[in-house]
Structures are given as structure tokens and as C-alpha cells.
Amino acid sequence: MDKLSLFPTEDGSVTFWSDTFQETFHSSHGAKHEAEAKFVIPAKIAERARTQTQLNILDVCYGLGYNSAAAISCVSSLPDRRANLHIIALENNLEVPQKAIVAGLVDIWQPAIAQILKTAAEAQTVVTENLSLQLLIGDARQTISQVPTKWADAIFLDPFSPPHCPQLWTVEFIQLLANCLKPDGYLVTYSSSAAVRAAMLLAGLKIGAIAPIGRKSPSTIAAFAPTPLPPISDTEAAFLHTRAAIPYRDRTLYSTAAEIISSRKAEQNNSNLPPSSSLRKKI
Image (cartoon, rainbow, N blue to C red; front, side, top):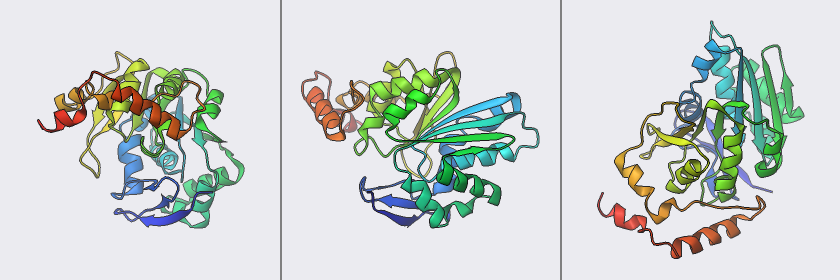
């Protein structure tokens, strides 16, 4: 079992530090702010809630529930909302949302939203007049099979970083995510890794950049053509032509993190592409 410890962030919200992954669940800049700025706003949740009658979100790596909570908060606060909100959330460790409840971390949200998160952690299903939230527990590489194709208006991709959790950043898994995305939907993630972006391109998506929030690097937004996206910089594009852009692969969707990393390292060592270090020297 993962050992979780409390980690305060700069906006006053608190997240967990994972002993297993040696990372926090959110950036130190602010857990609540990150959920809003890196996921809800770029995915245009408010705009869609005003114009659609149904809004579907796939929340990958639900964790403490903050990304889903931010989406629920956004939609429920709109006086002119039209949409009923449907969320399918994937989470490997049910202890994370449950411990977040026990520690009172969800109380940063309005009481009604905090109650939704509590019910989800207890029963894995929440249904109200304008909302449904289904929490699927298990390896996301397998539970994603329960998500309909072309279902999601937005996908929040929020695993631990690629070096620590490569299983959910592979070409094969991102292809599964792309299969779940509507033709005009958005996939958003905090990562700007060249390997992740290359996997998105291989899955038939185009990529764009989200302005940096709490760090130097931008985040990533992806969609199918012809959906317009904010462009990535010339420097970011250049990294896609180095060994850093060799993606993680998991052809069986059952490989361990060590196997995925080892396979990628071998592919990088045999590649004719220049190393990313050659590019960094020019920056």
C-alpha cells in the first residue's frame, strides 16, 4: 500500500505526497488552482456547459477528486448552464480519495461538492438531478474499456509523471484515450514531455500548449483536426525531433513500469535521432 502524507500547497489547499511514486498528487503552486487552470479552463468546460445539454468528462487518475470537483464547481456555478454533467473517473487506489475524506481535504470545496466527493469515495457512484459520477477502481489500462468510444467532451489526464508512471503515458494507452474522445473534444494534461506529445501525435491527435501555471514548462492540450489549438513554441517543436520524443510503449497493456522504461531506453540507444542535450545547448 502507498504511504500518503499531507503536503500543503501555495493556494492554501492540501494534497498528498506519495511514498511509492515519490511525488505529490498536485504541484506545490496550488492543488485547487491547478485543477482549475490546467484542466477545467483549457477544456472549455464552462463554454460547453452553456451550449450543450450533456457534458461528458473522463477523469484519468481521479486521486483526491480535485479535477472532478473543479469541473462540478464550474458547471454548478453557471446561472445559464444547460448541460447535465457526466463524469467517469479512473483510479487505481481507492484509499487515496477515502483518505482525502478522512483528512478533511475535500472541505476546500462547497459543502454540496464535498458531499459528492464523499459519496463517490464510499459508494463509487453518485447520481443527482444534474450529475452522475462513476468511479472505476483498478488499472486504468483495463478499466478504460468501460468508457464508450467517442464519448468524452474532455479528458483530464493526470497520472504521476512519465518517469514514475510510464504505464499511462504510452502510445497504446493514449490511443485508447483518443478512441474515447469526441471529434471536437479536448484532452488536457499538465505534461509537456516530448515523449507524451509524440504519443498523442501517433494517436492521431494534434497538440497545443497551455500557458505555464506554477512552473516554467507549459502544459499540453490535444484534439483532433480541425479543432483549433494554441500553438507550441518552435523550441518545443524542435524537441519532437530528438530522442526525447521516442515514446513509451506498452503493446500488451500489462507491462510493468520497469519494462516500459527499459524498452524505451533501448530504443533511444539505437536511434539515429540527436539527443535532446544537443538541443538544450543551443537554447
